[in-house]
Image (tube, rainbow over all chains, first blue to last red):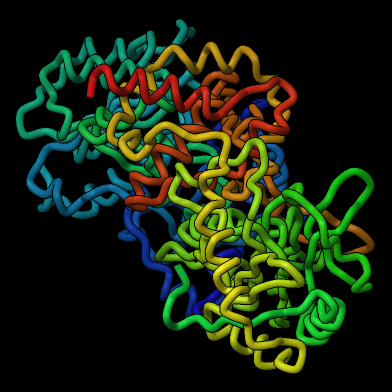
Length: 279
Length: 352
């Protein structure tokens, strides 16, 4: 009999990194399956999801923020915003968390081989993109130029800021950070992410654009990309609707006939154009 | 009408009580039972509780195939792990006198719960141990329209046995191997039917569909007109009537949506699955505050489109409505599914 898909497997939190502070703080949890066999069998692609369990509070579907090229540990970058994620933020290194998955299609990295990759993230929408740009940075010969455009409300809300600055310094990728409102000491762009995209005017030639962030941001970023000449089949996003089961049964993550947990969460804009406007 | 593989027997009225008693020995028996003003399919502990004269049960078989609340896992409330699965028992469960439409509904629950790559082990365990003995509808009820959504008052779909009430008893048609296991064990209560009894049953079966008082428009083409129907102004119109109570989805035999939550009591933790409804705003609310279906119009659209567009587009030919009429009959605001479908097929026709 195949194993029960609802059964989470115990994983140990190896490290907790504080990404941002405040009411909606963000932490990155680096976890390892307790069972070595499961750890070696858990194969995932950038852009896939996993269901995290904190017993007593429930489950939450979180994108995997790490790339499989980064080793066997899984990384989850979680904003403290709901019932489950709030309790998750109390977890310390050495404690246990439940993990089941991976779910969803992930990014079609193979199809993107040889192309320039443009990542456009907003707020807590960066972690799923990180799995893809880390994968690309770890496979430098397979992809062209990599650009990361990322913005948050304030400079204190930028996740992975140090890492992004290091990437920028290393010259492996071009990194453009922005914040929504002016701040003392901020030398970068001030304004919403779609405005920064418009300002930077990335070239569509041989380039795949991948965006994730608040739904409203995604919609405006796509609009800007289309105006810059990107074709719908060269624009990708990851739509992480509310999910309870993760395995295509509970009935709530659909956009029209498409279950996001099964057929998504990654869709090209060409696919999205064919769906009802239900997200 | 009667297929070649099936066999026909006659159950005399005077043997009915003995038949029910025997079924109770052969498994856990569910049958129509009166609970105050409501008749529903309930576990039978006393054969006399089985309601012989009943119309439609309040709910279909969904509550038996996928209970309203169910424990998926148990865990230690302090440590969390180990989490243990709590699969349902493998005992046989017999449903006596489900209506053929309610049996048909399982086709769509099967579509969902068995769909690859993850078959739902809880549903599968219950489904495989379920024996369905249907009672055909000689006199369909006022809100029924099974005949226009691919069903029939005497549909055999998913049934293991089908009973037709005739003078002096029931004509019992055994359809599947699972049904055969039952009829073999009640042989002493059954008689060979007379030619008159068979003819009487065939006439009743043949004439039942003509007695349906309501009819859905042709809905087979709706899934091809998804995008134009999605933008239709009728959702706002009907959505304004809706009070969002969710009764349409709770009583629908083809609805299956659920929530998963944790509860803890006395040191023990339970992860439970419970019915949920697309008619509730929290159903799709993101933690960020964004809600893809923020109003009643969009939630009503989801309910109707799912059954008549989305499901058939994923499972060709499977219109996820069996025409039982419960959503319309029991809606406190008189939202009439057939009126909605009528407006949809008219609207859809324009740009087809």
